[in-house]
Image (tube, rainbow, N blue to C red; front, side, top):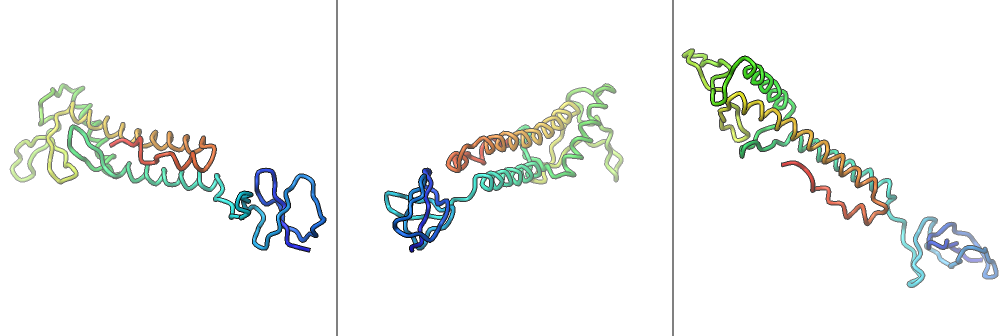
Length: 194
């Protein structure tokens, strides 16, 4: 009696049994082995066994989790509008959306392009009118008229939507990958908005 691996036509170990040399099980290749385990891959050219790879479902789940983590980080990681980088943390996006709404209301009320005093802000010390400005990621200020503020709000919303759809596209490619090699070939760093 010897420890014998029963090998399927696809070169996988289906079972490991104790069998004599005269034992024959139709449909399986039989190989004597002290190391083979159920699920191992068998290489008939070298006569070696190797453990099974990570299941494709596990690889897909790991890749999808990486995409979702990247999506979350990119949404809060800032974006560029008219050549200037701005922050996009949750509060930042809320503030941008609110200011864009106020700018739209100012436009409806008659604010004109080029008017930097559209929001009616005043210096708290002097009471003098001050132009509307947004703080950039580098802590510099950028003045904006009402149409620019509306465009800024639309760009911020489009940036977040772009992150969501980039993740959606990548996750679709992950699910369609027929095997581990095709999955590994997907570049998870591509397709994200700047």
